[in-house]
Image (cartoon, rainbow, N blue to C red; front, side, top):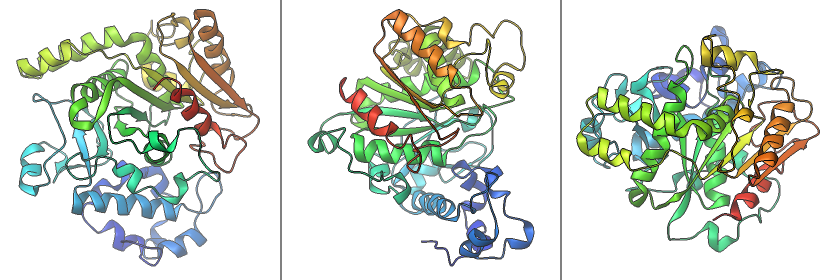
Length: 403
């Protein structure tokens, strides 16, 4: 296990970290370490270097990501599931040979995809391997995912149930330009499994220059895949929650509006890539509609006071998409129950995005809870050191009413 005493070079020169670590720890974060510091220990780097927003370099998060990836490589505790496949994908066997056979595709080695490959072949779900540790997120949870208070939103017997659980698919944010997979993916998955009793999945979806509908298709396919494998994953197929942060929130909220159209795009694409008739028939009978939606400081509208980067990255400035992808315009009474929160001082995505969503949900009579916290700005993840530190507890309690 790597510690603060290991150098950056030692860690990055270990397979598969050099090629795959940025699946978890964004490349733009790693770039905060100047070339002349790569021989330093991670403890020294934390003293010398800072993140863009002024805090010390996130060495402990870097180490958590590195050790998690090594656990995957050595113990097969988690698995990366490639979604766009001509054969219905599933978690690999614990056998290394079986893993290699299952993942004979470009940009993958030993069941682990290369980082920063932004095409159909590297759209994946990360989850605990059912044949090794189905709730691996709960069992490997880092200290950063533990709330600074006792979590009581979900009763203990429900958190530790041995029967089927609800599922959650988590979509990190990043303006449809990058993915904050550690703070808005892995840490949320750890919290949801350990304290919520969920079976968690983290989605790596396509980003710019891939434009609509490709990212939304990736999420629609992820929802259908999880339902198709409900027995293998030990989940209830009609209890699939999706959670997204910022642009990932827009991804979730818009997919829930457009799921029927997106399902058609998905099944057509599977046919085009030569998916077997059994795969096509399975997905024809599975809904892409989520059963609940959790949104963290989400992008909702592209009509006014919107996040321009998300709009440009998702649409490539193509005409006719502004209103289609403004979620508040398409909320109907059958929209899934929704939790959302924002911070009043958010300087990136205007908080009135959440206010517009709340208005539309109220008008349609959809079950919802939308909260605005006083401070915290944007991109806070679990936000335990901020005024919004209770948002995840609030959300767990909200969805605990449903299942």
